[in-house]
Length: 464
Ligand code: GDG
Image (cartoon, rainbow, N blue to C red; front, side, top):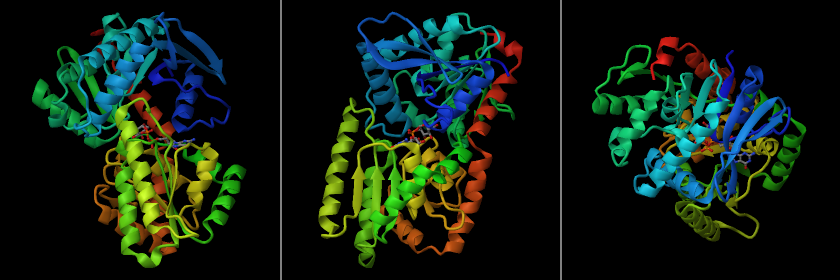
């Protein structure tokens, strides 16, 4: 395997041999260990003046190279263009997307800074793998600096439909910059098709059967490459001592009630408000169930500097309080709403203890929580996954109870169906889902992407 240079906004250095920090970091770290590669990105730290100084670290066989950014960079690039412009737009929230020239300028500037800083680290035969919406123009900036390596890009979030993308003032430049890459990976066929729809209509390109598209002298291969989890690791966590301890605590605190679980970053794209309303509808329509069930919603805050995230937090505080006030009894609270994160092993135990996994994003590139919930289940007595049709994971987990997350009635009906589902049906639905999750795991995803990149013809590499 060629040496790998991974570039992403943030870097997740391994903190232990077993990789307690999650599937993606583990999978990428394993690839870096095998190839003796480097992971480059922002440290998450702020500096008074940008210097381009690289902080190298080596942990458990993985080399990380990080830079600090200035306050203005963080404001315009990270909080601005990435999280106030692209994130909402790519999640179909045109109403929340903000178009400020300062954001666009900061995005270009930080991508140029990334390129300037990382170019000297790239050796001739390296594979360069750029990750996610923060860094779409990076490939172009690397080409501008003479980088002739094979460079791939993977988008972790959805690609929006053409008509939505048109609302972005710089949409053409953003899209055409992707042709600097050799391989562009999307989570789903749906995202790939949305990209192609734009490319066909705006750039007048053709795609061949292998997914190759040529534009202005460059050829890029488009692939759908759904990300997976480390299923073996997560099942082991769910069977481990920490999970068992938490499972025991959950069972005793549930006091015979059925637990429904949701675990999401506190983000408007995750459909938490709609989920609470669906759960409320369930409680109102099934009075005999009240007192026999509760929803544990874990929602660690994220991107708290962005107004729309402060707004969704306030909305959920209010809504959970209202539902609890309306339905709670002296010995029962319908929603346990928790704004903090838990270690992965503990989450695995909570997933195992939950009769229902409620995963209802309004839009999601993939959604790894859905896969983790399934992986954590007891094969003999699994819980039921309720999954939004608009999560990328719905393409693979077709045996979940698929719902429209905008419909409180569909959510309420699915909760009722899940709680009443006999064991045989739960097992019959779980088996094909776990088979898919184990087969198309995070290692499969990583290999699929790097194999596609490695197989790019050198001729395409030199044409920049
Ligand atoms: C983006 C895309 C795509 C959550 N709370 C805790 C915790 N988590 C972990 C989950 C899961 C991860 O964070 C979240 O991954 P998701 O896929 O659900 O969502 P995003 O953060 O939005 O990720 C998404 C993903 O990239 C990968 O391509 O699937 O569509 O939006 O692993 O378990 N982990 C711990 N404590 C928590 O409280 N330890």
